[in-house]
Length: 132
Figure 1 (cartoon, rainbow, N blue to C red):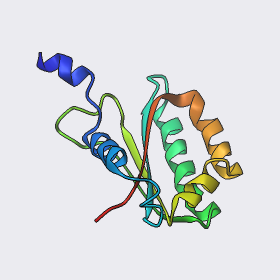
Figure 2: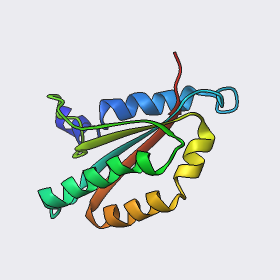
Figure 3: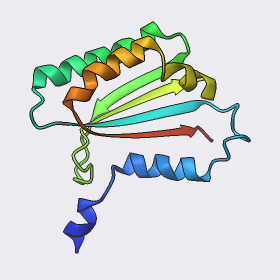
Figure 4: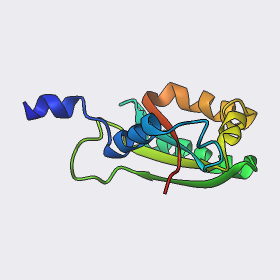
């Protein structure tokens, strides 16, 4: 039974972020800091060099877009084995929802997506308005 549950488990951070999204009232919270959380699961054929290139290219995006107010990333180090194959997490912060709305169609983001897609097996994206 446990293996069945783990098979469908999402990263804990994704579950927490989804819970935050589901309980947030977007109109009431528009003034809050907007977080864009992205999890990547790469294809088995992706080489370490290709994955490193993706990491490097994602890290360049904040310098190309003034509306990104914060950026951090890392790879899964959880001992729980609940990541469902997702290895990378990127957290992009914007002042507000308008920032992410400008980010998604931005040419630099679209160029990044075009080099990412051939290597990507799965992606999970969760946006939420930060609360204290």
